[in-house]
Length: 228
Image 1: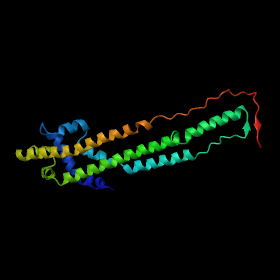
Image 2: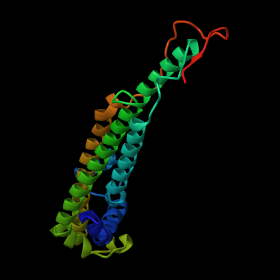
Image 3: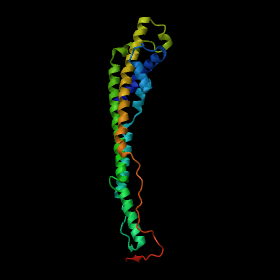
Image 4: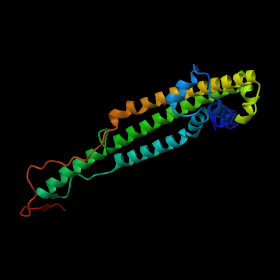
């Protein structure tokens, strides 16, 4: 468990109140929360839960499986010298060389899988950085005066509407402040996440097998000489 795993369950009731206040009471028209809500497309509680659900350790495990598969391709033996001569032997040797090139090296399947593993690791790194930043934001929110203001109000919105107007205004603004702080972190994380696939785009091309071009087509009239 990391910091976000420990903090998210503790701060969940506060986030529910923040979402409830935003949904039923709104926020000041000029508050930054509105811009964050439009750009992120999620409430503060939902945004925090999204990052809490990310599991970098699973991504790293997937990357390791890809590297293991890449090692298998790299180690695959493709005999390129058949014990016969003639047109069939020449064709076999050409196809074996093409298959070996397709499997081995950075330009083959082994290299493509290693590149995919690096991409998955990049996603895992992004997920962990995002979780760490969200955990720090939650810690700051939990210790803030805004959290005290929101938590001191009744949980139900219909009760909030009957509260003293000054207290109600303070609670609304406090909820908006908390929501803006958390959504700002989420917005930055989402923006950074878009850079991860862009950086890997050069290695994310489809790798097709290229059959060798034979100088002469195979013929049933050819002679096969076996070595023994």
